[in-house]
Image (cartoon, rainbow, N blue to C red):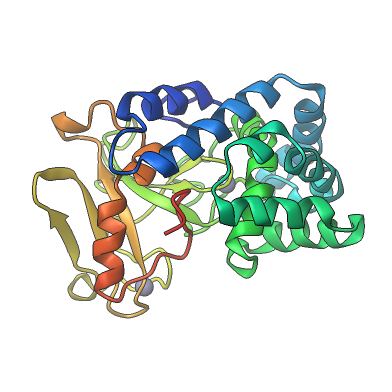
Length: 289
Ligand SMILES: [Zn+2]
Ligand SMILES: [Zn+2]
């Protein structure tokens, strides 16, 4: 559903949540960055460029869905145009105004790339974000976010019967966080867990007791760790691959205002704890962890 908990197209919902948590919180610096990114992306949301990029991504999606070929969005077809948008964003006021030092350096690096190298960067990012330096990938994500979200909202997420894989069915991205929530239509499914894409923000159904990184499904090997006083967010670790993912339990009363992609940034202490236990996350948060 669009406009719900920061799902595709709900940029303003994420902005409101980041403002509500506040940059004076413990995660102030990454939240300020998230606000600057969202502000920039909201300004580009209605632009002809975003519409044109989204059209490239969406072309052929209905046929792919009919043939059950995933991901549904054609990221390779949009790569050259996304590279141009990345160049524009890397020269924008957001980029020059509010970036912490490491991102200011990567901004300059992206802005200075020759067109061919920039297209290669975007192509690699589209293929597998973990293969790209996260500081460079950050600028591709800022640039591509609005078009990917518009395209994802246009095409719509598959229902749980269609897709339960570990990669995003819309853009092929990796899950950023996971969510437990009651959803209409899940009454018989018994596993109301979703993964949330870090690129196009789509939510899709996924097995409750499986590691999304390696597929481990032995419950003894994927312990979850709760944090005192925070019943609505936990770390799901994996003893097999050493990965972890943050899971937000949206059935908890205290989680009523939680917007997973924003609260991911705000719950940095959990990442620090997980890292201290030797766990790592495949997809970094905006906080850079
Ligand atoms: Zn996606
Ligand atoms: Zn694993």
